[in-house]
Amino acid sequence: MELDWLEDFIVLARTRHFSQSAQERNVSQPAFSRRIQALERWLGTNLINRGTTPITLTEEGERFRETAIGVLRDIYRDRDAFRRDLSKMHADVWISGSTSVLIHLVPDWLDDMFAKIGPFKTNVGTYGFHNTGKPSDMVQRLRQGEIDLTFTYAHPDMPWILDTGNFDWKVVTTTSFKPYSPVNHDGQPLFSFPGTEANPLPWLAYATDSVLARAEGLALQHANDSVLFFQIAHQSMGVDLLKRLALNRKGFGWFPAFSIREELADGRLVPIGTDAHVIDLEIRLYRAKGRHQPVVEKIWGAIENQSQ
Image 1 (cartoon, rainbow, N blue to C red):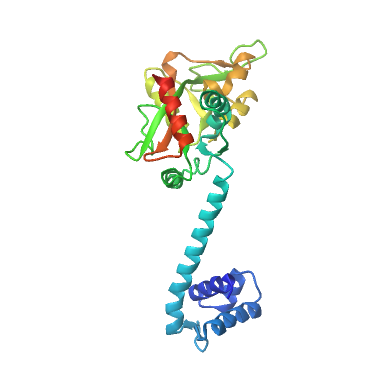
Image 2 (cartoon, rainbow, N blue to C red):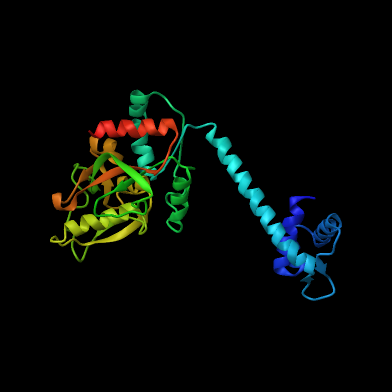
């Protein structure tokens, strides 16, 4: 018996048509029919009433459909678990987070951790962090231990999906979040607040569902006494894409200070606005409550000692 036969049968039980099922399974109809017949011979019973249009399942077919669905579900669940276990053999700590934090903060943070607790192997990636359509995927991975630690931007006035009783968090560092402009040939800001109604400033904004879009909204709330004129020119989840657009003089944008250190140092980006347009963001590290492997406990202890 082959898994393909089970998958074929489940598709046929759903579509009730051999031709449609064969097309969905990307095989010829004769080959598909032979595979269904092979499954029936292996089971020793008929699963399909072929004399009806559309086809129907026999009583045995109805019963076996539930069995086939359960068998495939269990097999693929175990396969995925085994693959995760194999991957974990090659990493001591799995880390997820916002792309910009992983790029601009985590390498130096790892050096600091290595100096404090010794070296360890990591697997670092976004792992569904930016999947705003299903943020529960990332939450579930963290809760189940598939991910050990998650970095994110945070602010006391920005509740987040992990701010529940199921997770612990520590502040790793803070960074200012303020508006920056590219410069003209004289090194002066190409775009300056407040703009005008006739010529609004081009704004490089974060995608609506992102954490930093909420930070932009918070910064604008803090500056509610100032009148600004701007309109969205480009929008993205990514700090680095918006930074590249700013360097190409496509507009101004809010950026975490640690993500533009080189550009500030060489004068390609300069701050604009006033202190009213600035907020301080925390970079938090989250983990699920409960027991953790020793290296994660050492990391957590090092962060606690650093904050004391």
